[in-house]
Length: 276
Image: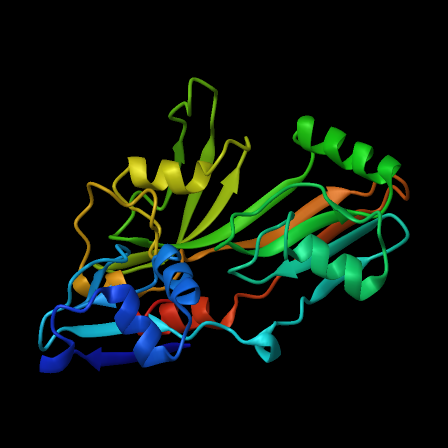
């Protein structure tokens, strides 16, 4: 949830942005700095993350409210059996490591051996596969190596993408990388894409889309070099969602296809851009 914009008064002119946030949002300096590090703070519609950025009278500052303990979101489970679990990862959480989806599910379910079989970026939402045992993890990693797990993403990107279907195969760090794009809806301003990846390079989708001049909306790391309309700059996170994961269960032999519904902020962005 975004708060503001807060207008800088004459008495606050010259105040560092980190101090202004701490004062207006009643945060500690550490919390205010963490908010800036998330790169979700805007001054006069422009993303600013420098703690000592000096504010001027009349500047308008918008920032999300940091979640309190009661705002810790539940993590929907799309599928689970004795071997695997597929969760619908919320944006804003790491896949594993400290205070991650992995850690929260371990605690909630009492499964100390639970391990993420792959990763999604912090700001990417959607299907995330977990193994409950060492053997299940080994089998899942083998499926990934052999490219027998299909993942389909949805993305909202800047500009009109054409043709309706295309393949981006620019190598990433010298390695083969293949991304397949399908236009679901488009306008002059933006395009709703279905995205399938044949390879799993780091930040592949985001890097490939930036390389063709259509960065993911809300993109912070790979949006350089593309001039975006002002209204896109306030989108708080990258509009990238892991919609579908599909694979043959290594133990049962059954074909699994799990689908995570588009999250609320993604659907709101589509509505705002008049896309379906």
